[in-house]
Image (tube, rainbow, N blue to C red; front, side, top):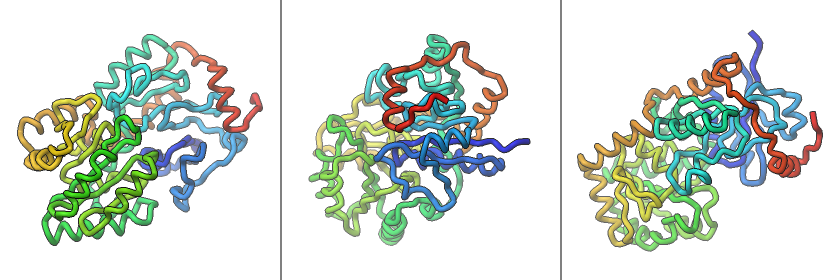
Length: 369
């Protein structure tokens, strides 16, 4: 059997953690995978010593992948291989269906969906457009959530130097004092981010030492906000910069968030989330719009009320019912199925002249073969 070539096409640092579980399966099969990093917002320093990177489209053409995995919105049609959308997060309804999670841009052959509440919409869209296929596989990024490993082993997989030191300190503090851990995450959007609004309150709460705080933001978060929270670092609060948020999710007891898709990952661990002015608040979260209610809401969440946790369980079943850590395997199986001539779409993808011209310009690639 010939060795298959796969390509990871990424533009953001969070893509490393999304695709590495798939990489693990590919390599275990004896196949090959390489990375292509597009743009200035993705840092090559996150690549490990044994991960290979291609720098030009000419190199990609020569490599000739059978499939291209994309945790983003677009991918060039002039790159060879089946174009596979694996998503960069869950649908948290930041935008309308036509502009957000369900925006069909004509770039993909296959959408690997996460659970029933997104699969049904994509199946309807596939029937409408007829040029892509849909398979419910679960999300590769959260496979490690369901693998029973020591948290410190997960931490060692991170390429960011400070995460291990900071979490080791906070873990030791928690063991000594038996304090609960609160993870604060926030999206970068100025309209949706809770970080600037909650800063003074979190400064106050962390100073009490009642709980231990872990703070982690979207990589596009405003620098001034990042620096504000870094200034709060102490024995009670750690600011974490990492490409792998999973160890933080595993350690925390409650999350404080806004409308960031990371809150969905936390809920899948059957843990409660306190949201501040969520754009579409639901019954499976404690949503507040008053800063002064934050402390009380965290207390309520830590008590894990039955009514709330029942709603969290319903959310899990609709959003990501797979709890076996095998979503990456299902993604590859879905790709193999199409490569074998099954589950094919009816029509060809649109030519996308304007979008592809822009991508050719960005990548400085003008050949037509």
